[in-house]
Image (cartoon, rainbow, N blue to C red):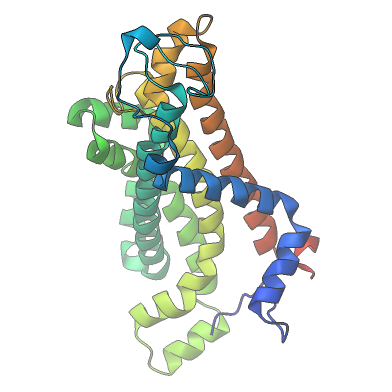
Length: 292
């Protein structure tokens, strides 16, 4: 059984305890609400968007906000709100999938490096090499080589991003593997794989959850940056980065084009930062916030 339990679950039950935690952490609730709403917006975009984001009408160019077009139209007569809503789909898909990939790779590398001393040196030297290069530079180079597209962007974000997770997981694994409950499992004949995934993995997930949540926001910024530079999702497919790219020259004439995408990026990053910092406090055994 895992030795580290920061939030005790008593007879009150998990749900009651969860409600009490959420009431004491309003910023966590606020961040979760924003994140859930944005995910729902991406999933139900075809039902929420008032117009087809690809539909062009030169007669309706640069229309001001109205009941028919809540945020007006762009230089091609397309609904600005609809394109901003649909732009959440590729951004969130790429961010979530690439984050899952880096977490899985980082966990596997970190667990193996921290538990098996024979491969620790080799894995950590590879990790050091990956950390030596700025992730944005590596991502730009990989996208330039593989070309724009969802699979290539996911790989370009995932390949340089796992190293920091591996470092954190390795450090936690090395501090846990010699504890009493792990030694007891080993003495009872438990296999290394069972010990890793049953006893050690649950205790290293807390810092990984925090980094992954914050990493989601960073991924959104990097995806938008690629789109802004013309290396991400290509027009006419709506994506927050290429919407910013198209809206920047029109900032004085039609500011809502760029502001709509910028506001959604800011909201998502704010939500992930709030959730990440609150998770860190909740998982900290010295924090007063867990005394419920």
